[in-house]
Amino acid sequence: MARRVFDFTKKVLIKVSFSTSLFNKELKKAADVLLPHEYHELRLWVENYVTKHPHLVCAL
Image (spheres, rainbow, N blue to C red):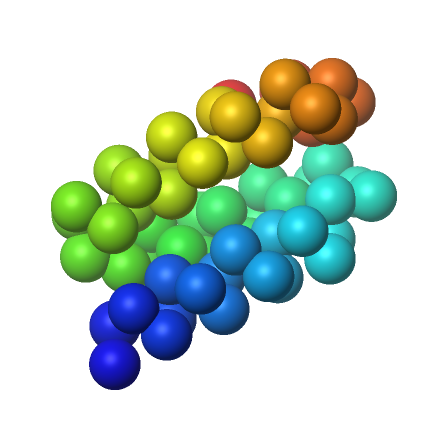
C-alpha cells in the first residue's frame, strides 16, 4: 500500500513541476506521509529530476 503512495507522490510532483511553490508544498506533504526510507528514496529521485528541470533547484 505504501508503495502506491510513493508512486502517486512522484506523479503529483511531475505534474506540479511547472511551479516551484507547488512542488515544495507537495514535497512537504510527502515528508508527512511517506515512511523515512521512502522519503529518502524520493529525495534522491527529486535530486535527479531537478538536474533535468533547473528551475526547481530552489526546491532542494
